[in-house]
Length: 218
Picture 1: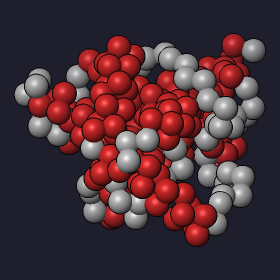
Picture 2: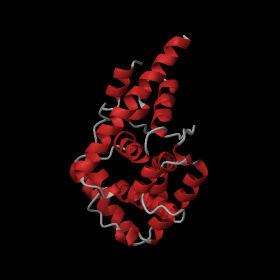
Picture 3: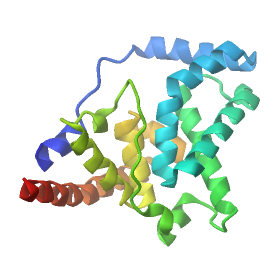
């Protein structure tokens, strides 16, 4: 797959989504279940979102061990603070917000108070890391022609600055709207748009170089 096609594929719409009313009713039902601390509901949520959550944490931290530890903490927060979810937004938006806040808390322990500081400081966590997170509902990033194409995109993402990587992953892996990303990251919509644009501009030459190396090897 050429670079232009790969970039275009990132914007390929997913299958038809549920209606807004269906989503609203589902989120309200989740909110009610969390208030009751329904163990069956929690099991269902873990089964539904585990792959997406772990993938987000992996891309955010660049470290599998940290991601897996944080993964457990996120679900503990969901269990203990379920009453905070009111169902007015999508559950995954709230879930990713919890995950992001826990990453920031972890960074504070290492003298970094936010992902913005992590972005500015860089560091070893931004180095490329190979990993595979199976998911039966792949996002646009995963809809490449073969495994090698997907690996190239994952490697390119992990070389981006953290804040650009995060926005790209939330938008194209997880399918969040720009407004939802703004809620998760607590950033103005204009900032989200800027990070998305800069992230796309940054990943394109990386994919082109990977594509050229692949062509030369053939």
